[in-house]
Image 1 (cartoon, rainbow, N blue to C red):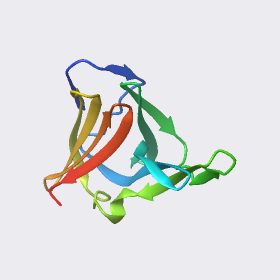
Image 2 (cartoon, helix red, strand yellow; image 1 turned 30 degrees about the horizontal axis):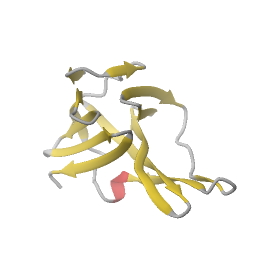
Image 3 (cartoon, helix red, strand yellow; image 1 turned 60 degrees about the vertical axis):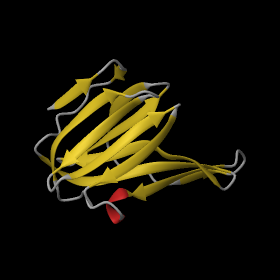
Image 4 (cartoon, rainbow, N blue to C red; image 1 turned 90 degrees about the horizontal axis):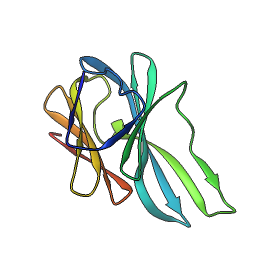
Length: 138
């Protein structure tokens, strides 16, 4: 299933993904007037044919179900761009079994860590309301 460590607020039902094969992993970048502001505003994960949306807001971890993966879009009058990035292009997660994931409180905000087979670890962390990602074991 999943584990929680430390105090943080949770909104939505964390999915039971452990032991399942990853079918897709995308992150949504937020750009403002040509500058990357947030590398992972939203994370989209696909397991068993279902998309799961994971995001943070003011230190809260949100989980939602999605019918499909959204497309990149721009709001030119505001200078905003939201770009969908296929994580698998740089971090080979598709086709791997997710052994477990856990959510934990960090010193500057919550994080979610995904441990895949083959010692591949992918993490998203919300630091001062900006979400970053990292990987190890590549």
